[in-house]
Each structure stands twice: as C-alpha cells, then as structure tokens.
Image (cartoon, rainbow, N blue to C red; front, top):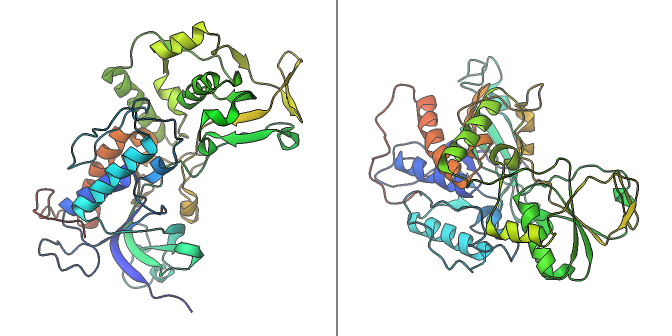
Length: 398
C-alpha cells in the first residue's frame, strides 16, 4: 500500500552547517512546518530531513584525534554566538553539541533519521495535467525516503529542494591495479579513528591534501612507519592563508561550477601552506613524498622506479565526492560531468539548490549559501512578492 503523500513548499535535505543555515533563513522568512499554528507563519511550508541519528552532520564521524585546535576553521551558525570551546576538545563532540544547541534554541523540527532514496519529477505533473505548463519551473518534485530500519515513509511533494547532503557519505578511493589482492588493511579517511591503532605498522598515506598531512604527523608520532604517496609533487606556500587568498580560491571554484565543470579538490583551490608543525615534520623526514606506486601487491606496492615496498596498511586520504545520487533521476549533470550552477541554483532547474557544492563547501560558504539560496527561492516561489522578508519576527523554525 502506497503511503499518503505529504506536501510542503520547500524541503531541506541535510542538517549540517549548510542545512541549518538554510533552516534559519527560511524561518526568518516565515516558513513553518505543515500544520503549524505559529502566528508569525507566512503560509509557506518547509520539511527538514536529515539522515543522521542526531545533530552534528558529518562532524559526528570525524576521527577522535581531530580536536578543535586542529580543525580547518569552524564558522558560527546564524543567530548563534561564535564557537567557543576548549582547543583540546574533540571536534566530533564539540561541533555536534554546538549544532544541538542551535536546534534546541530555535526548536528546529528536523525529521531524523531519514535517508532520501531518490527525487523525481512528480508524475502527476506530466505535461497536460492540471497545475503545470510541462516545464520544471512549475512542476512539483517527489521525494522518496526511508526511516529507521529502512521503513518506507510517505513521499513528499514539494516545489523546491535545498540540498545540503555534503560529501562525507561518498568517500572516493581510486581504482588501482592489485588493490583487491592486498592482504593488509585498507581504509579511507572516513574510516580513520586514531593513530595509535597503527603503532609499529608500515602505513602508506595516499593523497596530497590537508587530511593526508594530518594523518602523516599523527601516525609518525604514534610510532608508525609512514610512506607518503601523491600523484603530483605537493607545492607549499610560504605566506599565510589570508582572506584575500581565500576569496581568490572561492572565485576560482565559482567560475568552474558556473561553466559546468566538475568541482576540483579543496587543495586544488586553496593550495598547501607551511605551518610550524609541518616545518618540524619536514625536518624529521616525515614529508618525504614518493610518486604514486604503479601497482599493489599482496604485501605492499611496486614503486615508480620498479622496487618493492612492503606495507601493512593503505590509508586512502583521497577525498570525497558530493552526495547527489538521490538526484540522479533529475539528470542534472552535463556532458562535462559537472553541474552548471547559477549561484546556489542548478542553472537548468531552478527548483534545485545545492548548498555546500562548489564555492559554498566551507563552513563560511555554507552560511552565505543558506541565506542566498533562501532569498532566491522566495523570489522563485512568489515572483514579485517581497512581503515576507528576513526581518519578520518569529520565535521558532517549527
């Protein structure tokens, strides 16, 4: 038996930094849960979905040794004070606690755990049916999801989606000759918990980004014998990472997604920068980089020069891909393999906003994207209607 269909003007998928920012700005615009009796409601409705068991998004899964002193910048949520914690506190505890405070403060009605399986055009809005001109501008979307234990939930019919599903659930591991025959341990950054687990082992750290560098330093301090492999020679800048440099990096990423090109790695946009800890690691010989091995053997790897290195562990610090598999029925990708963006909206389908995609992937970018996306969405849903602005009083998101 098909569950009854629920309806909302907007659905937010994901409750990390970007999703919560969007929820806040939707609340400021008067959006409420269907059936809300809030006197400040505008009549517009929103449903918020999250796959996690509780607050925190991907931060719930960060490795234990990643403390607030070593994270790559955390931006406060809108309407909240600056994140103020002990630098030694684990980020997988501090950030979820901060998100939980936000949700409690604004009574955000997030439905969780809910895993969205797919989003499709509502068949009821086929060309010629009532309420549509046959184009994506007025057609509704249908969200199919499951709850705990894979229990099917009622489909959600909505006019627009703010997608904020991030990347953590799609770790990328390149296909490599011989990988299936390796008898040691293989894991990705997403599976990494603590360096002490690898004490006394020979560990290959594969990747040229910030996570790889962090793993190298921790593993060496824990007594592992590390070997660093990258596709290209890493380039470190001597000058510090400034706001101007960050702005240039964001602008470069924005140009790529506006042109419909695939989003590159974080390091390809920001570069690497020397820190005192990295200088010390270089002095100790930890940052001796090797070109990528040509193949993997059951007990190690064949180096680029043909020699063999015995290894116990392959740690793939090779990044993540955006979790957009549930949007595949909408055919958003172009022939280049990217998605052409118009701000936070998909250029070819203004019903879909991708938060945390491209230039909005950082916590600062996610906050800005949440506000910008909601402003654009209001104009899309009600062209010419500016009656409900962000300054409308309200107490909760519910």
